Amino acid sequence: MLQKYVCEKNGIKIKNCFIEYINKDYIKQGNVIPNELVLQEDVTGEVNQIDDIEENSEKYIEIMEQKEPPEVSISKKCNRPYECPLKDECRGNLPEYHVLQLTNWRKYWELFEEGILDIKDIPKDEILSSYKDRVIKEAVDGNKVIVNKDKIRNFLNELQYPLYYLDFETFDTAIPIFDQSRPYQKIPFQYSLHIQDENNKVKHFDFLARSEKDPRPELLDRLGKEIGQTGSVIVFNKTFEIGVLKKLAEDFPEYESFI
View 1 (cartoon, rainbow, N blue to C red):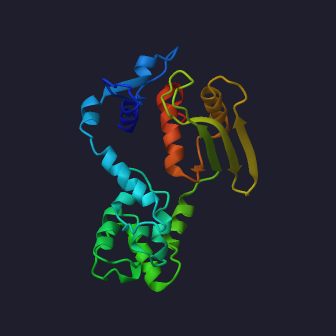
View 2 (view 1 turned 120 degrees about the vertical axis):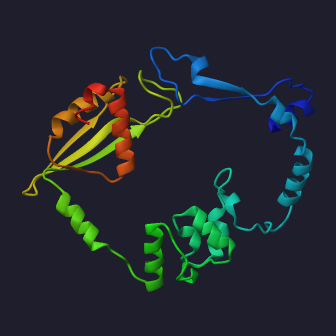
View 3 (view 1 turned 60 degrees about the vertical axis):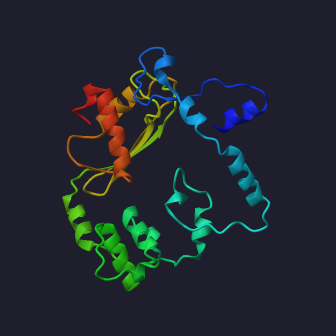
């Protein structure tokens, strides 16, 4: 939109406008095929419908020339279409424990728009559907730290030795490097593994890719030899680690039973 406006103001006539973007479903097999990796969408019609650039530009210039920043209310637009880098500045005058710190974004905007800013001011009969939000509310109201000892106890009782403390390191690229990989797919190239037995003795194992070839087969082979058939695997970020393992199982089905 803006690019077309600038070009045409400088005498360069633009006939058609396209957006090109990465096809996230593309799977590399052999050489990268550019026409399959990069998709193209004609947005000429949408761009031609936008005619308020000059009007908005004048408004932006006026704002930029002001000595003080304009008063802007906190709203959903702080995160749309992207997160505002000055969001924390605007929220600096909110209470220490404000409703925008809750986890259910629909609920916290509902409360905020009703004028309820402080978590302490949420009415007792207000239904908070999120368990985490109910815990936050209880902690703030009681000015206390809440520890669910029963859940911790149950978690510890369910652990089976040996304990495997596992952590992956990954990288991702827009253009896939290895066969059987996708754009932006997280490729594990390193792991750290501590194994603790019932006597609290700990052994450490690790893997670090040291060549330009696909590190995943060797990583899986090594990991499969170091993690036994029994025991509990402990990770810091369960969602992330499971996501990496699921993708490895899809791409290398010969290791699926181990994973």
